[in-house]
Each structure stands twice: as structure tokens, then as C-alpha cells.
Length: 447
Length: 178
Image 1 (cartoon, rainbow over the protein chains, first blue to last red):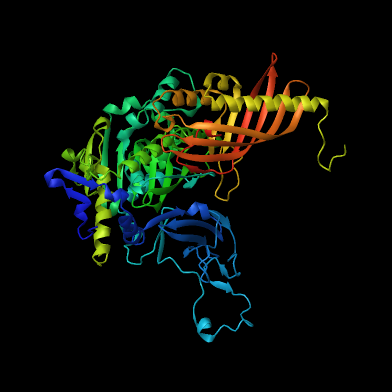
Image 2 (cartoon, rainbow over the protein chains, first blue to last red):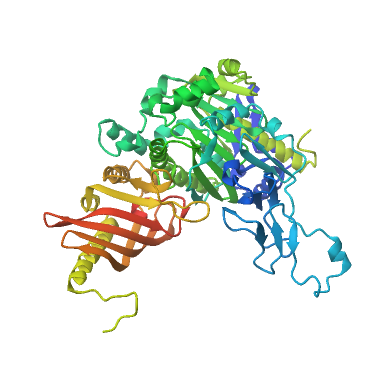
């Protein structure tokens, strides 16, 4: 394979009306290895929410690409990012997804570490005749080179050469704020999560998460169920929306720097959103404009490993590439901390209906990703078609919505829902190509 | 016959209740395998609850569906009716072609049998699913609590709580996988 020119993989020529992605980006084993090294190991990745580790000595585990990560809250209340691997034989230290412990003990030879990752025990140090050179080494857990939070969202980086987290997120912070500000005490992950896999490349989820226009074809059977519910039959408790109404509503997409993107649309039936009963409090706290934008549907891509969808009740999903053709997904329902019980149930029934891997929409996505992965093996196929959908209306900057919100995306598009498009895929692939080019040429990824 | 402590052999009434429960659970398994959806729905009371709890990050099961996530939670049969509409529509890629299943139910133990109206049992279950679309086979397994009630001589399911032990879900999950 020739990796000297990423234009062979992401053909990005908007001035010619061209944006194409090659099928190898989804199916080439060597590219998969390179993107682990040059993307996942060189940029910020989402790790979890601060509310998951609210007390001292709470911890959560996650992965950055192939690297197991342990995030703790130490006795000073500070968040510490560590590599979840014992320094002795590289045994995984913590298997739980979350918990509370003052000491993390390796199950193999008992090496032990505190919440700061400091080694507090090596077996029989007095009698074991370790040489002086061993004692001179640090046996502490490796620290993540960078760990930082924005509005309770914790990120980590395996490379120290990344910009400050706030600069990395840039104007995506506005959209994160619209999630974080939904409750007066902040937001949390509702207890309970779904973990699932699909046998296809992680970027099929990358695209799908900011692709509202697959809804009417992929999820036709869900729309049928919604139609039955409008007649008062079926599970009306799940308060499903009448999404037909939004065809004529304003909608748009924004590509931010560093690979992030957002799609948004005016949402019919705002009274069905689980924050609707709290809107007076929200308006008073965040102002009219931000409150209205919380009721707009917004799907977010925080490059490379996290998405938030807030068109029903908000969901947060992360993806971990396991192989070029296998991906692990984790998904949670987001909710305001301290939300009344009845609203929490309302939120959950909407969420489960659509987003669960055992729900009535996500399974239709995941099986189609697998169909796509099988198709990606078709050797006569080169570039995939359709990434340019919407390019004819894309502009530099933020358009009307960007001006109204004071946001400065790199590119954006505005129109009606029924002209929805693939413009929000461009930012992530531009960043994919940028990081791959930097890595392959041995250049720093960040100025 | 002497039984070990904590275990009592069923008396005649309990034996009869167990026979009813086993018969109904095995019948339900066959209806799912044979995709006899209307008859399967008819096994459930209209006011049934159908619940598949999720797991928290510490791997414990969620136990309050009002404030914690479930894989599936329905407070009435209407949610199951929605699913059957979708599965049978041919418009859901996840169920087209329809996966083929074999459900096995066993280890049925009586939790409660009061008079002739209520039987509560716990059972073990395993379902082998052949996903025709991907040519993959997956075995789902777990345990289930089932409450049966008898109205006008007909036993129906009033409550089902299914624990999915291997909830590292391969691509998708639906009621016919459980």
C-alpha cells in the first residue's frame, strides 16, 4: 500500500465539488494499525464524566485505542489519569468499569498502587534481593501524559503534544454546554449502560452519528411504529415524536476544527422532551437562546471516540476500535443530576425505545454497518459516493446560525431537514487525514 | 425421601403448579421458535410487565426501571405488540431475513403458588440464534422470573423479568433472542 499521500484515501477538493472517501479507509488492516498510532494515540479521547467518580478514591476504566486507562479521584479530589496496567508483567489492574478503592492490587504478584498511581507495595522487597538498579526505577503506574476536563467531561491523551483541552474542543464547547447545563446541578450518566459490538469499522458509526437522513430508510420500521402510536395504539408511554413534521423545519451542520462536527434541526413537539417541564428554570439560568437550542435536536461528533445525540432524550456513546472490522460500543442515557423520578422514567422509556442495542432503531444501524463492511471488500470499488451530498450549499464559517450563536466553524451548511446531507462527515475525515499525514511524515500533529 | 436442608420436595399441589409452569414456558419457547407471534402475544396479559434489566458499571443489575436503565422495560403488553409489528413488517434490517432460534427452558423452580390463581417460578434459559444475514450463531443465556395468573381457566404471563447473563451484545438483541 502507498501511504505517502492521504489524498488517495480522502479526496477533499471542495472547490471542484469533490469530497470522497476510499473504501480502504474502512477495510485496510495496515491503515487500521496506522490510525491507532497516529490518531487515537496522538489526540484527546473522551474517558468519562466527573460525576462517575464523584467521591475520593472512585475510579473508572476505559481505553484509548488499545491502551487500558484508569481514571481515579485522589484523596485531594483531583482527577488522575493512569495507564491501567501493572508495571511488573503488564497485567490489567482493574477490570470493573467503575468502583471505589484506596489501593489497586495486581492479581498476579500483588504489586499495589494508590489512587495517584504510586506504587505502595512490591512483595518481599527486603528478602527478594532486587538489585539497586531496580530500586532506582520508579514502579509507579504510568501516567497519562495529559488528563483534563471540560464541564465535567474528562478527556485524556497518550501524547503530551496536544493543545489545551479547551482549545482542542473550540466552539464545540457551546454544544457541550447545551448538554452540561440541562440540570442546575449538572448532568450524570443514568445507572445502567449497554455494551455491544458490531463486526465493522468504527468509522461507520462515526458517519452514522451525524447522519440524520438515514432515518427514513434505515429506520422505516421504527417510523411505522410511531405512526401506529399516533393512533393511540402500541407503547404510547414512550412518547415518540412525529418526525414527519420536521421535513420543512430549519436544520444545519457545522464542521469545527480538530475533527468535531454537529448537526442540528428545529424539533417538532418540544413538549415531549424530558426537559420540557423544567424549561422555566432552564431559561432563567441559561437565557432564552441557549434554552431554545437545548430543544433543537443536536447530534455531536467529538473526534475521535465520542458522540452525543440529543434528539429524543440525550445519549452518549463511545466507540473503541477492536479490529479493522470490529468495534465495541458503550452507550449511556444522560440526565440532569437530581431529576424528579417521573421525568427520569419518561427519559428512560424514550431512550430505550430507540437507542438500546435491544431497542427498535440501533439494531437496524448495526446490522447495516456489517453489510457495509462485507461490501467494503469489493475489489473493483474505489471511492465511496455521497460524501459530497450538501457540498453544493456548504459555506466557510458558520452561516446564519453561527452568526446568531457567535460560533466560528470552519464550514457549515443550512437548509431544511429534507436536504440533510453528509457535510458533517467532512470535518472528521479532514482531521483523520491531517493526523495520518502528520504521523506518517514524522511531523508534529499540533503546532 | 429425605431432602437436604433448604430444599423441600414439592407436595402434590406444588407438583401440579410446576407442571403448569413448565408446560407454559416450553409452549412459549416453541411459539418463539416457530414465529407464531399472535399466539406468543396472547400468552401475555394486556397489563403484564416485561423487563430485562441492564447492568451498572460495577456489573450489578439495575433494579428500579423508573430511574435506572433497562435493556427492555414495558409496563404493558403494548410494547411487545410494537416489537412484533416491527419484526413482522419486513422493514427492519435487523430482523430480515428473520433469525432462526432454538429456545430451551429448564431448572424450573417454584417460588410461590397460591391457591389456583397465581404461580411464580424461576427458570434458566438459553437461546441459540442463527443470524441469517451475517451467517453468525450466538448463544444468549440467563435466568428468568415468571408470574403466571389464571383468569377464567386460562393461564397467562403477568410478569416476566429476564436476566441476560452475557449482555455484551453481539450487534443486536430482540425479544426472540431471550
